[in-house]
Amino acid sequence: MSKLNDNLIDMDRSAAGPAYRWKRAQQLAQSQVLARIKHEDEQIQQATAYLRMFQEIGRESANQKYPTLAAACRIAENEQSFRVLKLSVLGSLPRAEVAVRLGAEQQVIDVAELLFFDIRGLSQASGWMNCHVFVPEAKFGSKELAAKLKLAHYGGPVVTRALLDGQDKLPLEQAQQIIDRELQLHAKLQAALEFDLDAKAAQQFLQVFLEYDLERKKLEFEREKFQFECALAREQRIDDQAKRDCEASIGAASDQGDSQDDERVQPAVVHSADDEQLVA
Image (cartoon, rainbow, N blue to C red; front, side):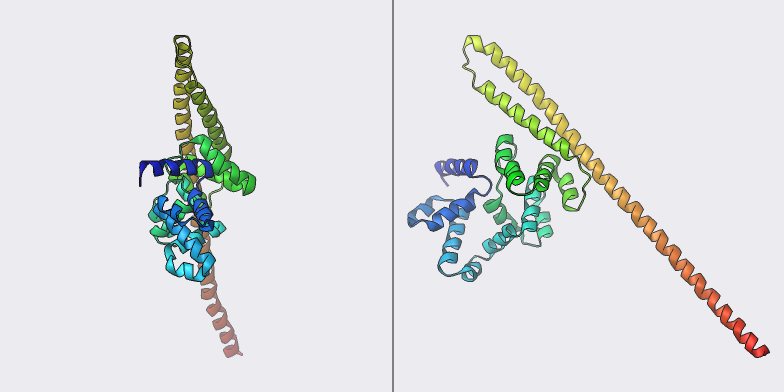
């Protein structure tokens, strides 16, 4: 693909968000100008062909011709599956692990990500992530999921696995604070870049940049601290579960022991009754 097309794709994603390929395919599927599709990347071309066949012949035929793409669409259409996909992508889980969690082939996971949740190269762009991922989910979807998406993004694989496996006691407020600071830091950098670098502004620019660099280092420390605290929370959950399992095991063993004692006592009572009958 040409550098120009790469730049156009970056512009589309910047404006349309993580599902820009699917949105582009929907537009092309409605268009009568077939030549346009030749300038798109392979995944957009496939999605466009799938949607056109869907419209002209029906979903069953389209699914048969494009089974991988159809499976990727099913993931996006299923609320729970799409939630797992988004958390996994944000938390940088290995694709093989995501495939196991979703019960799908890894190729299907790759296609689902490219079409519906592609944040590659922009995951560290705080403004873009806030605009296209976190805020839309909080406004039009689930505030709880929006908070978990932030946790996965800033907590990494350890936190993401805890979220997917049902751990609730995680520092949501701290994640939001880190995000807010990143946005403020991004605004400072933008302000610094807007200086006209003449002799008068050079000193001011240097001061702003030094402040930005210091804040960036502090924020990186806060991020690492946050990840450490999340890891501790997960370890505490594992320890608590192990204690509960141990107590349950001891309780079960105790109940079994009492039952065996009862069985040993019962024959003695029977024998005693038999003796009384013999005496009589």
